[in-house]
Image (cartoon, rainbow, N blue to C red; front, side, top):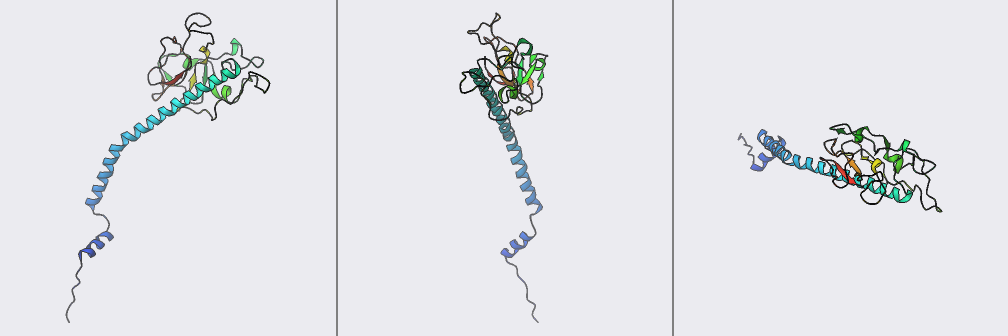
Length: 220
């Protein structure tokens, strides 16, 4: 009998190789490519995430600031009281230093009213009318006509609270405050990525600046 030899073609070899999976060298090359791409792309992804957080915080402070301005247009006074007095502005006994949103109290280099001041909730003033200001009606020129923000006010992107130093709002004309001296700046602000509020609570409107990486909109 004549033995028949089985000859395999290059195509057959490739098919057999495919059935066997990748070689160790091929896997090493693939993993090296994946690791290299990860190292190259990770800083870009992190920067994109950080930029998007800053953009969101900036938009949120603008929304809060616009809501407070609209509140003033509707009511004729700013939301500076934890309780109304007969439907209008409160008294000195319940005037607050801050309006704050939910979230952690930011760190601060030295204690000041950003962290120790009396406060009321932004939602209480701008969403639910918890102080019970007089409501605007079809026959009244002034009154609470909210809600002034369309969505629930959440913590900032770093889980800290938004803050407005409303206690310093002053409706007198010019730069001079009602009690004398120069008016202080008022901010809708967040402590930013580092979680530390670095903007002075009280600073003259003539020299006011946001400190560090704080993100805010100046209202006065």
